Length: 172
Image 1 (cartoon, one colour):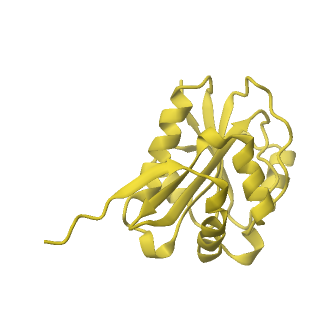
Image 2 (tube, rainbow, N blue to C red):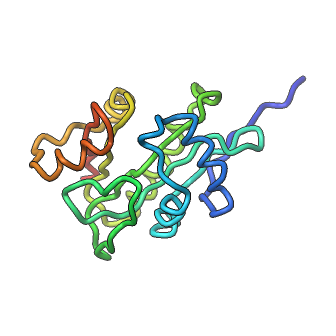
Image 3 (cartoon, rainbow, N blue to C red):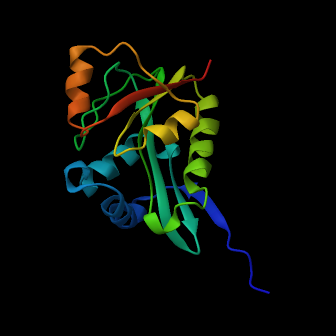
């Protein structure tokens, strides 16, 4: 009998950045790719809230998150500004699953890790920008569109590509 393949979720380390770059390249168009230095900086901003999914001894999915203080989403492929120690928002910066690992439930497992961590903190909401057709996935997870979009938010969303949607999940 073949042994069952086990998926592990563990904290992301800087040694995972090369694998993350490969996953990102397999998932997104070139216009949405972020460079390794900015991804590493986002991880260093909040290392306790970034994870990878390992399946068959290979990193096949990742989740980068961080505290966030602003009503507008962060700039894509740019350094994060300092956040308040009491930031009310847990921001999901990027969740990606390599195409050959889709259907294994890795995204849900990573999201569960983020939700568990969020509930241990003082956050009131989780926010994200759904890109590249991901909005239906996030809506199924209980996220809802943020209805009050001012010009600054709309401008920032345009950098995330066509059909970018600003969503949130209430932790209250």
